[in-house]
Length: 471
Image 1 (cartoon, one colour):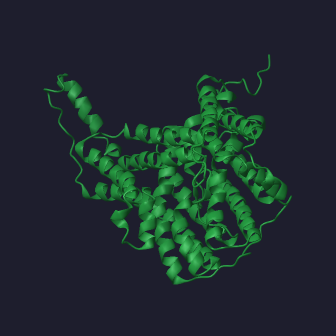
Image 2 (cartoon, one colour):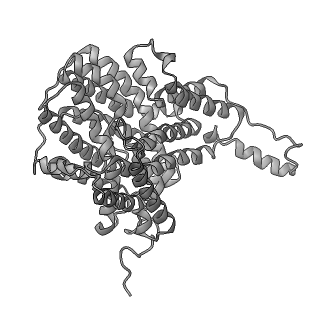
Image 3 (cartoon, one colour):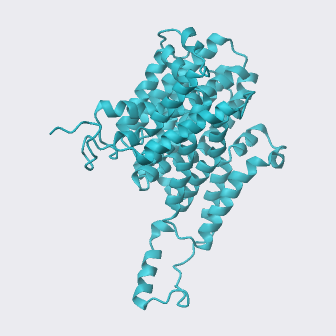
């Protein structure tokens, strides 16, 4: 008897039905919905950045729409580059790329004071700096031992949790934030996603986030909470225009963006580590880290040429990998292809962007929580001695606590304030610095009063604690 695609079990690495093999290509009937759900998880965030910057720069509606289309097209190309790879460029992991929010506070004053071409020129230079950092990253791998990368991933999940709740309440700045219909839609998506994820079988478990989003979207449309005007107003086809806005180079704009680009490498490393830990249960290789960061840089250069802003891996999709267990990079590449289509077909992009924030919130709540869970899983492999506990605790305190007390850094420059407000950047720098400064604890001798095992067992414990990769 022939087994259908949706019923056939995963049989192991190399099997074409195995979505848990990073190099496997599932049948299109299975891969397409899995790829689309990756896109839905990040779509609104990706197009929000150009809308914010265009609004701050007081651009006309037609130029704003042009930049939104560019953001979708570029994110698709960047995702294809990251997941499929090109020579040494690309992590070749299930990583979705999109426009980085981290650069918004720095690019807005540049766009207002010097013009949008200056902002794009600075972004291009930042991309070059990121690519060079990725090229030489193997020489700096010692900066990122498991205790540092695990802490990165935990703080990333924690910092994103309030964002998920903001979406669930209706989105940032909406007048009816927290209204019952927002909470109801988010709760519906959450219940459907959790139910299918835990009790579904085969593909039904893997597409749980997509199913939750579709159920929430249909419910929102039925009650009149979906605005379809974006679909009606959009053109059928548009084509990308390189240098349509132009590029200018001003040193005053380039320096802060380049500095932020180099610091943002820590966020990229955290996403790559979170992807391999949550989906593959391992640390990334040097080649994956180096290629992934280089892809961020090259994609950011490409973005500037095609009128978009710096690209980076999207944390929502790190949580998606951990939640579904689907790690096929070809599934994510299909999602990248869908983004390219959305960039070329504005009506398709308008349909996806009409999904209410509350519907997205119900799904991303789970994803952000799964990111933190993946980080905790990584840290469980690290000895919890007093040195490592100090690194973890201090870094989390800085990452979570500092952005909540704006008065502590209100007198700093706008660029420094932008870096601190992210939380992740000061937390990551704290973890790296402490790991370099604090002396490594020599192999501890177990206290016999606490470990009454035989001397043979004690020797075994010591040999385990001596593993260099766990220090």
